[in-house]
Length: 407
Image 1 (cartoon, helix red, strand yellow):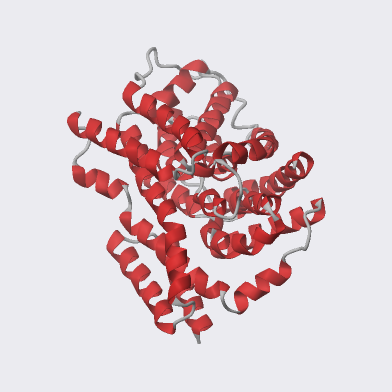
Image 2: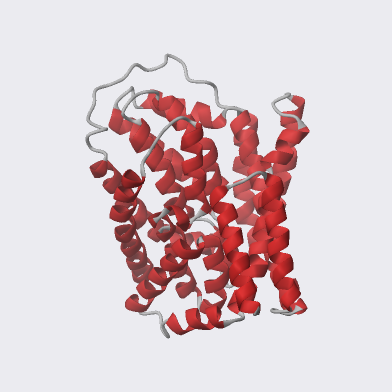
């Protein structure tokens, strides 16, 4: 009975994530799902308390980094950066696409993948205008939201959740994943160039004489925050302390400049989504304690050879596209701890890169689709899967190979 209740609760949460309703509905479903699981008594109170303690710092980071990203967007940081890329490319499609690709990598790495799909994508579409650059630019944002989130623990919630099972500092994580990221980015860039070669073969477009100025306060605060992540992690300080400090500084600055009202920043923090993540942790903990957890455990290889690492990445990809990558991380990573850090990093390749295989792989994919609809841009399922099914398997293989060779 506990497994049935947990399965139904997970389905309700996933359906809510896919439909992305109003905050009140999201909060109500989250509370109901968690309450239903807790009423079964599986897992016990101690296990639930431990799960919430594990998720607490991750949720606090999520809330604060979303505020940081929102203030950056309101200050025009993304708009200025996108138009600087356009000006740097002198209106030529290939240099502009390369600049957008690099900008998406940077935003994902520093401000997390949600900032790329929700805040950067519409700016790229506006900067592209009615040109053929709109589609490749939008896909660069989507692909980098998932694939470029490999480098830093703060780039993706999956990484932060996995850090609990890794005996690695912030810098050590980045050092292990840097060659993996390079391999994946080469595949992604070359693949997108080939898939959109017709869109990128046009002539130069008119260029604005002056790009909007870069807002220096958000730029400096984000730079200090990123440096703080690396420095303080060696002393065991959770990332949310730095992102929280940055959020407080930027909130005060935005309010003084009248860029936002307090209610805008409360909405930017997405508290109902934070509640959703906590409820998801409770529900997945219940599933992990039942037959589902044992089934996944039976599928995990017993060593970390290249074949085994690839099998782990494929398993993570399958779970991510079945359950979303957040649910898959909560289920899979604790089972991989006995195999060591390399096995968990291989899983992250599947959870991040592999989640780009389908719309259901990550919430970022769904948010990207919703962002396009709001921007009046239509990209069909055929176009999405033409890109995802072509690039994801190759990028996954390249990432695991780089991890095996450098590990």
